[in-house]
Image 1: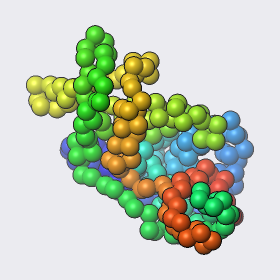
Image 2 (image 1 turned 90 degrees about the horizontal axis):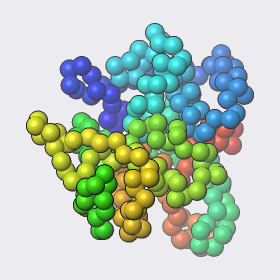
Image 3 (image 1 turned 90 degrees about the vertical axis):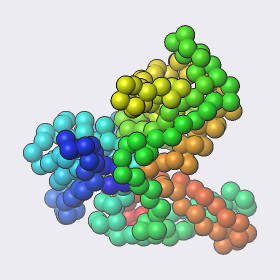
Amino acid sequence: MPLGILSHSGAYAKSFNIKKWRMKEERELGEMRDGNRGESVAQFVSRVVSAMCTNVGTYNFENLKDVERLVHISQMFIGDVFYLYVWLRVKSMGDKLNLNVKCPNCSNSFKYAANLTTVEVNSCETYEDAQWTYKLEEPFIIRGKRVESFTMGPPRWTTLENMSGIGGMNTGAAKAGMILGSIIGINEEKDDNGKINQIVLTLNELDDMCKADIEGITNSLDDNAIGPNMAIEGACPKCRSNFVMPIDWSFDNFFGVSSR
């Protein structure tokens, strides 16, 4: 995994194993899909990963109950869960992902075959290595304190699970959720051991953040993201302009017939 799960030794356990996707697993996942239609995309991804992994980092999933596996997935870093998900797709169906693309420049619609083995993956050795500081353009007050900077880190999968479905999600809510899930400290304050004083904020405590900082932090999240880059790049065959588009990672599309 790109980052992994902290072990008792202080090192990050990065290894994992997945099951072979046979007819047995196909039936089980199909029943699971039908029984959880009301869940968000991220929530169902959690079920797929927890069902198809035999061990992840320090956890032996074969010895855990369903709810225990889901809790562990929720607390994993987003980049690690995406990595498991992409790995499962490549191992079960191959590295070719067929997409329907509409050029943002000329509106030409065409099919595009993406190669998942070329997806860029950013990794690091420790959680501290994945942290960075964002200095606010316009400081504001939180809990009676003037905040001039945030210490940021890779968000947990629960950040995506707590958002509504991708298709109906408004971008403001998505940005707010990702920013909130990535803030781990304020003003670079540290404890007696030199580690960041971790803080958990509520969404309304970010209400006074200005637009420039909303966009600045959002861009910094992309620049410092850990895990696979869930987007594809290419050129329109008609107008030759370059495009970048997100990969539709919803289960039915990512593992569907059309994706082969």
